[in-house]
Image 1 (cartoon, rainbow, N blue to C red):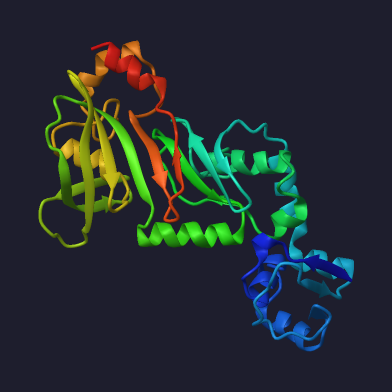
Image 2 (cartoon, one colour; image 1 turned 180 degrees about the vertical axis):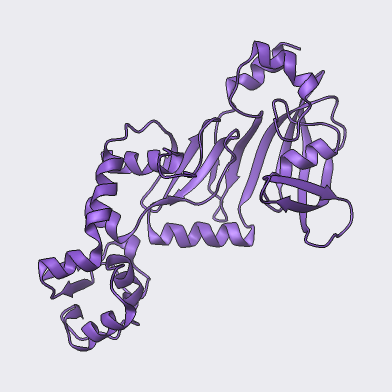
Length: 317
């Protein structure tokens, strides 16, 4: 028999969903059969699977060790856990509580891995939680913390991640409803005067990973909106603050380029001729776009310091 006592971060979910996470290799029909036969119980009693779990509830599973390991898939999970444990975490934590962790991502690292061999910010975060004692093997098998918003490889700044199921639900809901407030700092070429709301219609070419913008609604396009304001002028550059109203791929980068003020060092939408002499002086693995500030719907605010490269380029003008 194995007993699992529900932690605060696992509460408020249905028992059957908890069991599917705990035993991912078991079919749903099998789990319901085990509940009916009392081979799986909740607080010592028969359960249907529809019950909402609360902190302190005891889930008991009357399987042999071999059967439990088979359905839990611990062989793969344990191997992944041990591999993450071998990573030396190198992350900047802005804020952390039981449900969420806020990170400051440098440019030049993936938010999530694109292939199995990548070590992204997500793997760094998991390694950090393992080394800090916040994530053990049992917890890792039941719920896997994960980053909840992505930044491009070359974009720096705030990334939100969920440490618990409650944190994941909360952040996912806020992201979907656009109730998060996100502000970016962008160093652009030229004397930026287009302050205020910018509305465009975006079509993404998934194969090329490029977007095209239109002034009017177009077939296959999604409406995007950004609020732009000037933070500082040091010509021939302007430091621009961008507030996301919507949040689509390459939204800020493509809109600024369309306005005639591409972001410095933007390899996809930028001005290569203007960037060329700067790149010789300032090697950098991304564009000068920084996710500076996030405000959650409960009013909590988090900020990541602007990388020094911004000031270096501005002072070189």
